[in-house]
Length: 306
Image (tube, rainbow, N blue to C red; front, side, top):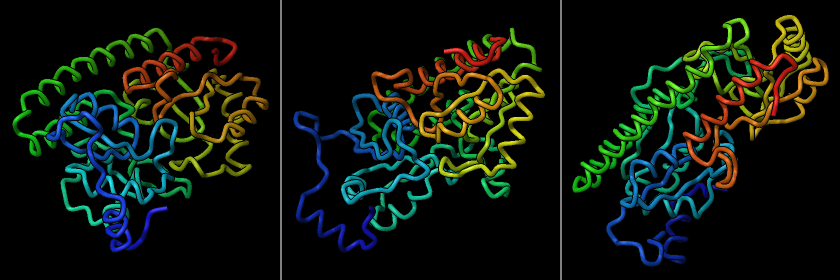
């Protein structure tokens, strides 16, 4: 739990010492704190060996509901850059900044993205924060990261910009591959059920209709009316792709599968990466895993396949 008073945090810093460099690391590395794992991968890509990164919400951790600890506040105070998504994706970041007394650069990585709106769990329209689900949006993410690092560490500006540019080429290739995966699937078949509403940017970009039993929050629970509506939709429209996300309530989709006879596909990774030995240890792998699983399920007449 994050301490609420700055004095308590500062006392802890005096007692335990600053968040310092790892043994053997150069002293001039740029200390960066990053809010969640997907952004962490992008910071590593752009920063390379010039950056010493501390990740807050790690692999398979839900950044919506993450609760920072004293050690996180200590690390933040010693960081020259904080990177978060913005768009209210991490509601706890503002409290962490205020409580820790952080005064250095805070980058909202989604700055400049053309956003879309979505209905939250209460039915109210809100900004959809999951902009990274469109790989072309991530070109803006890495450009923003490169610009922020260049301001802090101008001696390495050329390196940061070159890394961001090279990664943008990979993102363009990923986008072309994804379009090819869905090109052979009729638009009427490009439909999927997921356990929370996190893939609308991907759906908008590739022409996929996603439905979810809950809104933006992974903690929300659908009511009986919402579940009945989804069950009718799956049966009526012969939806073949039903998926659980790696951090969501698996019982929701399993109930839907039992009622419709559609076997759930492999877990999708939407708000967090997998562990290093999993199928989505970095952003590019995550997108290939998700897109491949979605396309396979949409093509498969009997439902999702593993």
